[in-house]
Amino acid sequence: MMTLKEIIVILKAEVVTGADKLNMKIQIGCAADLMSDILAFSSPGALLLTGLTNPQVIRTAEMIDIKAICFVRAKKPDNTITTMADDLNMVLLRTDLPMFESCGRLYKEGIVSIDNLGIDKNGRE
Amino acid sequence: MAENKKYTKTQELTYELRVKDVMNRTVVAVSPKTTINELREIFRDNRISGTPVEDKGKLIGIISIEDVINCLSEGEMDAIVADKMSTNVEVLRPDEPLVHAVSKFNKSGFGRFPVIERDGGKLAGVITKGDIIKGILEKLEIHYHEEEIQRHRASYIFDDIVADQTTLSFQYNIKSKDFNRAGESSSQLKKALNCLGIQPDLVRRSAIAAYEAEMNIVVFADGGRLSAAVQTSQIKLTASDSGPGIPDIEKAMQPGYSTAPDWVQELGFGAGMGLMNIKNCTDKMDIQSEIGKGTHITAIIYLNNKK
Image (cartoon, rainbow over all chains, first blue to last red):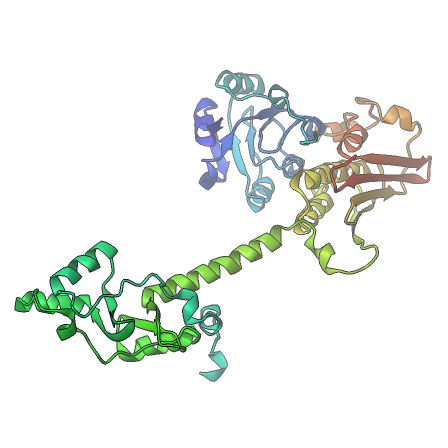
């Protein structure tokens, strides 16, 4: 469990939008460029790492109650995306690091994937 | 003036609340023979700045910290309360509306009033401006809390509508190949379900299923319709289009099987996960499809957490 502030340091990331919400606590991470995978295998409250920058990333995050997204590989989201994220109270970060290294750094510092917590992604018993 | 005059919630409460609702019932009444020196300690120990004076159960005056200060400066700390108290005591009754107390405070400039029972004239309590503020704030807090509970109470709208079966339905028209707006319908549907106070995890499952269905319509069909019928026991999602239809449903249900064009995959979809996702998120799913006619998906999510 760590705050987005700590994650920004670990990923050498910068804030794209949502600078007022950096005290948000993150325990779980998920990473994919395939949004269907995110929809299928992630959990609410996770940090989403992706190299994809289109409005569907925000929509996908909205559907599963993901509140923080970090774009990897030096990708820059455009205004449409930041506006959508603002409306949904999301935090957007970006880093120059590639996906592999971003995941590795976070995992090393204790961010885990949903499978490691042993709970069903939809919270069903 | 008159047209701008607003009747605030606080004002309303001063009529609604009674003196007895906000007054302090634990009164530290003193006897007339108490010395000012003793009184000073009573005030200090009880953290009060004034109190009624009672003799044989009858209110005979009121004495405040101001009287103590006067005695201190005159060197009369050994004087007794009876000689220093105000005997011209104005009182309030427990059943008077708070607005009477407010106007009495405004007119008199006193810091406190004893509250006396109408029957028997017994001292029931003391009321200060602080008690009034506290009482109003508490009442506002209760109102706010009730409002919050109601806002969050699951599907309360269903409790208010009396019918043998209530169904709320939402319908969204989905445009074809409009990738920037794809997902808007599911987004609106999710907000609507949240408004109804449905449990967050059930809203999430409905939203994921709706979103996958919406993406399928955007990608494969020339537009279509997404709808949700919400009842007390379930949400029924329906996605229909008049697109090309699915040649082999069994195959289409397999994870990883996809017929989506490259441009869809570049957007992060079309990896053959959609239908499986819908199935996994819902409790019951049915696909009807006919080549050249279209596809009709229904999916049900039970609201009582039983499968």
